[in-house]
Image (cartoon, rainbow, N blue to C red; front, top):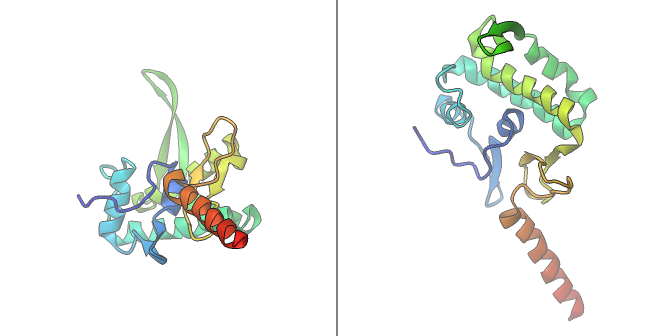
Length: 179
């Protein structure tokens, strides 16, 4: 499998789907330009054994990414209908397992599985801590993260990159103003 080229991975599924777009040297990159990129994303999220990386799954996953972007970067009012349209393609079935009660996602069409799971994950994040769903504060970054810091003040997708860029910019601006 091809290595995941994205600079930020490991976020909750909904945000990880948004992070299939990122900036590199001022140019917007897109992992999901074809089934090969979808296979990378599915693998990064442990979904590669469950869903096919084909054109149909890619189309539905891109639809979910657009819906999530409208809700996260726009507003819940803007994105609600689009996210709901994705969620209409699956459901949760309660099950009893050897470990006790559980839930099993079901899809009429498995090609909707990754898209539906990402939209469902977004609902879970909204239920858990909607104020912790964040876009990176760097003006040239398009990445998103779920703030798990204790005090909830994380601002950057990665302090080592975007945080340092912002600090360096402030330092150079201050040095210019002093001259």
